[in-house]
Length: 346
Image 1 (cartoon, helix red, strand yellow):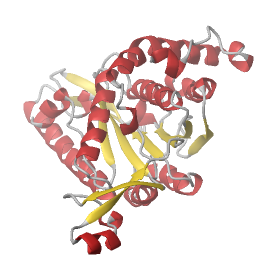
Image 2: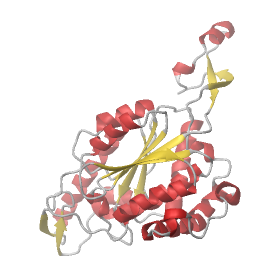
Image 3: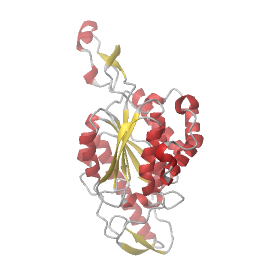
Image 4: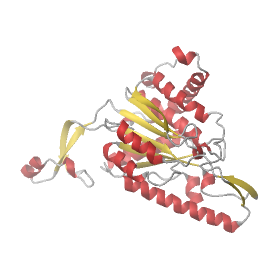
């Protein structure tokens, strides 16, 4: 099935990709993911691809009795009146769909306490999902925010299909994900709402939209996210690092705010300070999850110390549970990664 979906990857893509070092790095990364993560997922996702993307449902396929949590807008009132039992219409999903990646590469995403930064997780997740989706003949597009340390949408890639198009997307992200220098002090604060508002006006056709961000931003992004969710199938992919939730005892260390450049020294050997930090982090987590739920979006947590294959499988499980319980239009957040949950209990 892997060869049928993705074919044999060329050693070096033709044209500009053969000459550009960034494109060669993108091709090397994609081939590595194809032979590691994607090959593993290929065997585990057989028959489950339809849960990745849901069509808009234009063609009537069948009628069945109403079940708890079914969308009342799909009730067929004529059949209901005739049979004296509520029935809903079942639609055939569109097979040629578009997926859009709204990618937040603001300075706070360039943080990681281990081998991976949040920006590395963003790059690998986008590569895997874009390849899975395009491998089924669907199109992928992207909007990139803050890739040069500026608080604005820096690049937009129209929705198209094919492996070369995925390589163009990765090449666009490579300068912001490989060898990136820290953002200068005084960088403008992230306004995630600008990215979401831009997507409201840019993405016209109903699509699956992945908002990949750590959601460390100025307030005001909740309303445009809700507007986007009313028109599209939106998944909030949240990037998390364990050190953002719980501080270990490292003694006196400098801490720098990636968004503003401000730096202070803190004493992590102070147990009271660590407990206050964990409490404030837990409060922020609860507020963020509540905001995402009120916006009506699915939520997937991606930790920097988590295996990417496991994260994608959790996402598929989330989508299957939504379909199985008939929870269309109702957000169902995934469980947090194990270490994240432990950190929040501190």
